[in-house]
Image (cartoon, rainbow, N blue to C red):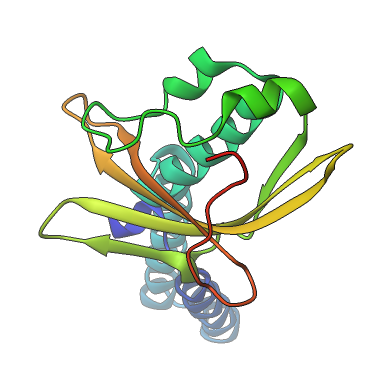
Length: 177
């Protein structure tokens, strides 16, 4: 649903329309002009409520990526595995033995709309982001593409993950894989 994750430009357009309508109402003070302002304000409010209370597939994928990073940092395989889909081509996309040995700090960022795509024919969404693991042995920085598929319960779960060199965007596995 597009309105569950609207672009900022849609908000900007509706805010500008509502402000202009409010100015027209203030100038002409007619019932018809007030109804136009009210309609613009109601549409803006409805968009805000849908955006706030309905999670889009992109927002769910983003939430799951952050939850997986948190679970990986804590070394919690069970919590991590809750976000992996039933038909995943990977079962353990990160080397748990190294996680437990080095106990890295794991951060993900840059989960933006620009690195989000939908393949309608396969019902797969792809989200790209940056990830960093820091431990006493050094730092690993990767650009990551994670693919999610809608499960039978309606949730979107991880089915595949690929790691890339952030400078060249060439595939590059994690150490220990």
